[in-house]
Image (cartoon, one colour):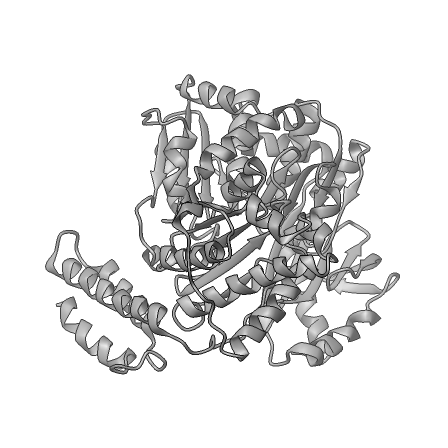
Length: 575
């Protein structure tokens, strides 16, 4: 019996009465594997579920009692601070980081250098405008959020508490409520053992580097000195926040800019018997909103997958990947409706990927389609913004439409200079927003946009994509990477040797000679060939890896570009 394996696993992964040396999530992962192999309704299923609950009770105790510094030093990167639940994220460490944020706002009264980036001029203004606070479906999210709230209200800061919510809706709440900032306890698409802490300032977008650097430095100082925030929380400062209602209001307000009639789109869906939508929430925070997003009207044409609460995500990596998309594809293929839309959304719903039951469409392609749709079908005019690692399909469309292209380094906060100007902002890692909406990536606006496309055009996404490709060309993007032993300055110094691959150099790619016609160096090194295929090499900002981004002009050409990228790393002595 499966249940006979449970006790040995506890002995293998746990040290009795010692959180520091116990590997709780190694244990939970193995228990989830046992649970997944158990028969429905069986004793094995009951016992493995109970064992997972027992393991999580130990994690909760670690969250509550761990007073050690985080196992890995606090660092706010492109999407905030991330770490292991219990080991890095405890009530103490989250309280210290929240206190670091409070300290940053208090310092405005002596030095207002950060005022433009923060969007407030004084600590008093921050207190009055308040903070929006929420969390995703991660284990311990409500506990950690409550500690952040206690720190904020102890310092007289009003809190709009959204509870479990998504990144996009919390961002919308900042704008609708005119809040000073938001805190979202989420690590986005990271595996189940991770927690995260996102901070957005008054513009509701990812915080600028000058802000996150200040928070990082202050948090490290508080942790190094062992300073624990003094808690004297004031419950009257906590107000309930309906983040989805804020999102709905923001979309309605922005309709004249982006042309998306939210109420009209939902009415059209419910009145269209030939349209079916399948949404895979992967157990994330989107599950708490999805039926309300569609107007709370019962419909057998709205199919929700993995919409149960499960902080283990069923043992899968909770990201919009091809592997995770298989349930959506299988569901749509069984449906009789001719118009089919399938999406998969990550835990905090800032990433989304699409399908029509026949093909998968990631943001490389959908972002370009969105730009074309708003420009040509909605009659909107403006530039397109995409990160440099994203497909050049949008570049080709923009040139054909005589519109400008904004192409910054990786990270959604890099779009700040063109918010309000770009019709669409998107990045290859499945994040998107549109003009008149939040400056934060948002899966819900992507879903609404895709639904409007198929209902307005009366065609599936794959058909619309091919129509655009026939006019502007076919592009085949992909990404990959390799682990490397070098890190930090040593890695950057080695990668600097790629400078020899300059404009005019001829490469052998798949047996064909191709000349480099342009090089972009704002984020790693992107080398563009004469046929508009390209390869880009950059170090990961979070892992000991070098990432490859490639785009071929044929499906088979992707592997040839990956091979060329690896050969380059061999030539500079990295592999």
